[in-house]
Image (cartoon, rainbow, N blue to C red; front, side):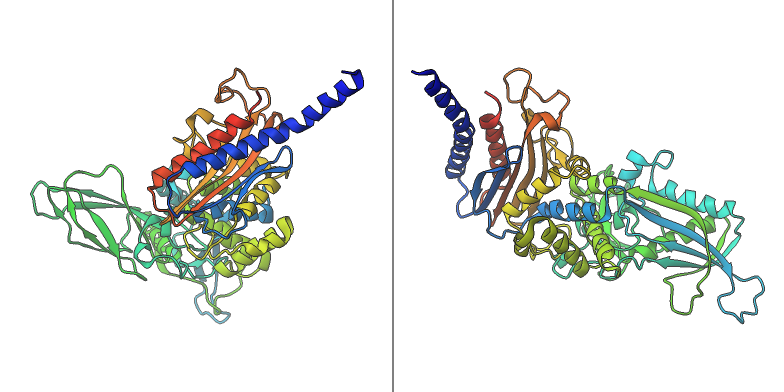
Length: 509
């Protein structure tokens, strides 16, 4: 063969090889889908090679699908871009001492504490405090810091504790959330001032006599919640809690056989006012009398206050809890806080959706029209998104030098943490993903990182190496399944098999 033809042939082979590899990958994944026994399950798949800026595979990629918690990928991206990577939520304790009215005859003035919420879902969250609270290891310790701040200011009485939660509206739950699940932790109310993830932890302990009422411990302890105990000590553990909607009236039910080491959770109503009452109880124990706890009104004076304490939470911590742990309250607060930032009005489900829509229009153009966001967490079945939009968005975030690492680090990591800590363990540290599940819906979307020069030849040869995104082939994938008939575990295995096959077909030969 003439030398010039040899060079031309070699060049053509080099150009064709990536395309052949991509075609092989698509063929193998389609084979996996064809061989899966998933009945009439609706499937949407979008897979992009971000490093080469090309599509690998599309299956019903423009079909609107219910995303469940995969919606958090969209909401958290919008919040991060809108609020900025340096944003901090700030919850303030402010002291005022002045007459409530100009002609108030009380020369002492009126002692007022105001708690100003910023929509921080991490305020008083024990999981966050254990990891990031330094000397403040739990919610009770956080409240004590505020009590100490009041005492150090020399305050001996408080006429009013004002709860300013106006950063958000007071539509605490979305109208499309399932009413029979509103007492569950994943349907916690969303407020401008949140505390202890807007839930109570209940620990039942059996009595020594069968048929007697069990002892029940509540955290945080408070007299602001009314309880009725109709549970009994019995031969099984069926203890559960009902809460009358619109109230903090709890009823303990079922039977208790063993002492609970993990709590039974129940949501609370109007967390801002409840927290104010809990704080007032702790102040009273410290010898500081408190009058009323309420929200501000138009008759309250405009006063200059003194900050006694501020709790700041970086957006990165909120993103991590939202995406790694799929904590719905966190997603809803990011959603409403985005709406607040964009509109200047109290954050709401409506302006949160507007904020997300504005972000998507800017980033992915007309494709944003296919996205419907009713809430921020994905609990609502009125949400819809396409697989292509998700991979397009993953690409946008990956290519943003200011946001990419914060965003990627917020996702669950295969074999390490979050909701995929026990999935795809052979790809440990190389899959960053977001799961999603509600009844009939199972999704997995995220990134697969394939090192260009892995140590050894196995699929997991780079698992324990330091991952350098600049030296990796980056794949964005979105696997959405609606109306599924097989078990959830079958679909999760199918999702994992697709990601494994991508890694097998695309890693360097």
